[in-house]
Amino acid sequence: MKYFNLYIACACLLFFGSIHAQQTPAKKQSKALSIEGATAHLGNGKVIENALIMFNEGKITFIGSAHMRIARIGKVIDAKGKHVYPGFIIPNSTLGLVEIDAVKASDDDSEIGTWNPNIRSLIAYNAESKVVESMRPNGVLLGQITPRGGRISGTSSVVQFDAWNWEDAAVKTDEGIHINWPSNFSRGRSWLGEDPGLKMNKAYADQVKAIEDYFNNAKAYSKATPSITNLAYEALKGIFDGSKKLYVNVNDEKGIIDAVNFSKKNNIANTVIVGGQDAYKVADILTANNIPVILNRVHSRPNQTDDDYDLPYKTAKLLVDQGVIVALQANGQMERMNTRNLPFYAGTTVAHGLTKAQALQLITLNPAKILGIDAMYGSLETGKSATLFISEGDALDMRTNIISHAFIDGRLISLETHQTELWKRYSEKHQSN
Picture: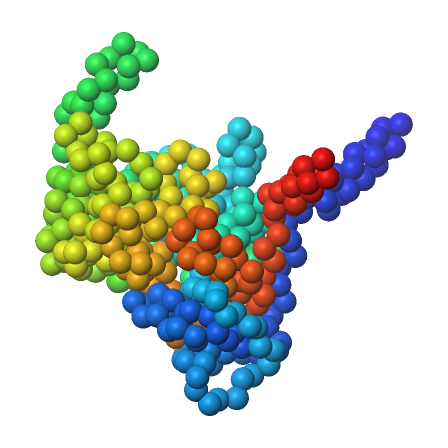
């Protein structure tokens, strides 16, 4: 009976797993394709009306006007009246690290301890996540998978969202270290009877010194020839030689300035501010030091009582106007689910001052530059990866971003998800009544 029950359990698992498994990843592009007639939004600020895009073996071989007398290659997709965009890129994401928040066994976005630069998010990435799969119908095709927690959370990697496993998914491996900068202020815990207002963090100076001491030790290690390998210090070597970026999660004005000075003091060439709620106040410092910002979620509320009500909506505009390279993220509550709304966050910035071309760059070329993948991704250009999609309308508008085709490295990927299956199932039910 014991073996019979085990057999039944395994059979049920295989049966239900096969029903709800992720769509099979697409095969490598084997035949050339041409997309003709669409409005091509290149992601670099340019737009081509009635465009012709041709790609083969995963790369764009031609992009220009469809009026040009040039032989089309392979199958031709008629996209008249539609729009083509480069695949959207989500930075600072925990997609694939957590499947169901309430199920602890599916939550692997942080490690125990304070100093974890050697923790690699990539090897915990679940390429078969149903949540990851649900990004593709909105055009989010690549992401930076980032650990959380501790003072130094660990190492991030960039992946594409149609893969068998994390090895297949990897686009850029172990490209950055993420650090959580101390806050100058904290709020009282009202549930413990404390005043919920802001108060000074008296331990701030000590917490910053702890970071400085840790980096000094790591720097000394990188210059020595130790007999015993320290994995944590080994992971930080790339920060000092410029091969990795330092992503600093910090929001307040003083914290941003201190983080910039810390990078300068330690000769860290590649620093990115993540969060940057008050970054617009010190945009001149960021521009002078060539430091980009991965901005907090656009659809959020102001943090301070004297902030403008629409500050989260217009912060991107304030930074872009001062020459800061800005990308958008989806941090906060229900982060992974809300990642699918990335294009609509960009659309909101259009309503608050940016042009559509500028807003598109916030989720295409700008994050590609920040993540160091712009040689192949982030814009539609000859020689770059054919990672793009065709939308019925404006992809930054939730009413019109209806995607008919999506490609990652030239591979035509499935746009079916558990959610689209449910939508079809229940729409047919109501139509029959």
